Length: 171
Image (cartoon, rainbow, N blue to C red; front, side, top):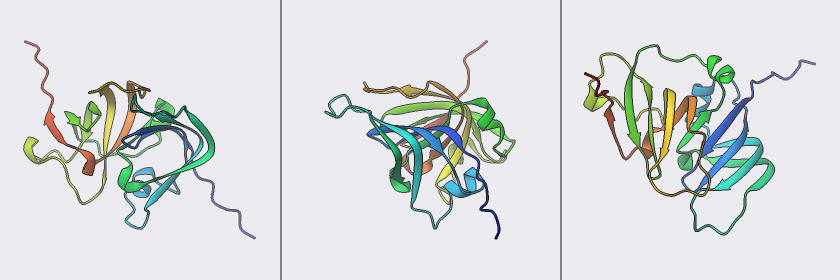
């Protein structure tokens, strides 16, 4: 009898639009391949607490052994510690970008092919793109703020409202 494969578990925060899930995320294999798998429609999160994001929600945080979120509703998955992020293989070319979603602005290093133009960086063929050294800023009041700085964030490109290259104004 063969042993079942051992999968890596990551400390993560997942933003679904109206909730923030904090727990343990265990992809079955490579994180980005798992997130972008066309045959996968949902993601389980273990030892998880669900926090309502919108201030008018009348529910308190809920802790569960497992909560499942649907891929279409997942706005981003953030790895919250450097050790976990260091285990992920990512494209080396990157550039500073700011992305805007319904609730958050996300600034960081967007990992994209170097030949991509600033006005055509996002590829919608794969739902999740990688941002490292990411900072997450609420655009509206939220009941529970996500971790402000995260080493790696996988952003669902279908939830991007707008983006632009981030050029610092140092002179």
